[in-house]
Length: 279
Ligand SMILES: [Fe+2]
Image (cartoon, rainbow, N blue to C red; front, side):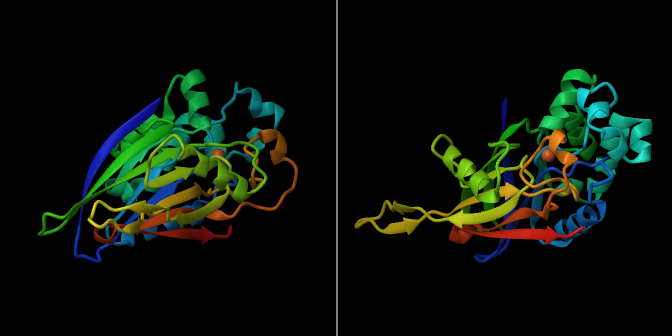
C-alpha cells in the first residue's frame, strides 16, 4: 500500500540547501547491528543545518521465537541478550531510543519485510509503533513525499517529489544491478528523488535528463533526478543477500552507512552523498 504525504520546508537564501537522509536496514536488535555507526549518523543528522530524514524499513531485526527462521537458521545466537528476553518490545524501544535525538527532523517511518512479518504474525505492527513513538507518520512500504520548499522572506517555492520503496529487487549481486532496477521504476513513477533499500548495498547518484523549457524560444534544461540504494547498518550481513540461509556463509562485510541528497531548491540542484562507516 502506498502512502502519500506533503511537507512544507522553509530554507534560507538563494543558495540555501536542505539535506534529506534515508536510513535503511538498521536491523536493530541483531548483535551485528552497528549501533556505533548509527549513533554517529544520528549525531551528523542532528548537527547538519536544515537536515531531514526518513526510515526506510528493516529498522529492527524483528525475527522472534516462533518465526520459522529463528531456530532453523540460528537467529537466536545473533540476537543481543535483552532482545532474546523480550524480542519485539525491546527492538521497538531500542530503535526509538537510538533515533530519539532526531525525532523532530523525521519525515516518516517506512515498513520493511522484517516489520511486515511481525505485523502479520506477532500481534503488533512495529513500523507503526516506531512512527508513533517518534511523533511522526507511518509511510508504508512505498512512500510518496511531496517536499514543498519555501525560501524564507520570499514568495519563491519549489516542489521536489521523493519516492521510496523498501526494496525493488532481491538477490542482486552488486550495487549496479540494484541501481538499474531502481532506475527502471522511473518508467512508472515520476519522481525527483528515488530511494530503495533491502539489498544492503549503498550507492547514490544524480542523473540529469534534459527537458525543454516553457520559454520562447525554448531552452534545453537539465532536470536532476537523484537515485539511491540506501545502505545498511549491519556489520555481518552478506552483500546483496537478504536471506538468513546465506547469512552463515562468510562473505565480504557490507559497507555501513546511508545516502543523502543535498538539495538547493532555488537552483533546482541535487547533489548525492554517501555517508559511510566501517564497523
Ligand atoms: Fe534488511
